[in-house]
Length: 103
Image (cartoon, rainbow, N blue to C red; front, side):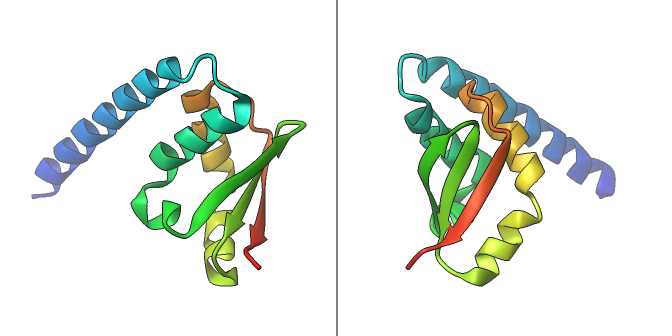
């Protein structure tokens, strides 16, 4: 059973990478913040997108608003991975992500 699960997960990851590549190419011509907002949808998945939003980008730092402190802490644990994925998908350098709780 674990071999089947691994094969399925590998296939899904490959499909996700392909879709991310298509998205990245289709974003050419948009402002960096808009490219990152679109990439956020792909990099995070629905659960996180429903609880967060890209609100700014300057000096290679992405600013993301989060619904509450619990989700902020959760996102901080994957900050480096998200920075890498967003850079790859959007074609915009993300050196870091600054999370803020929505007021």
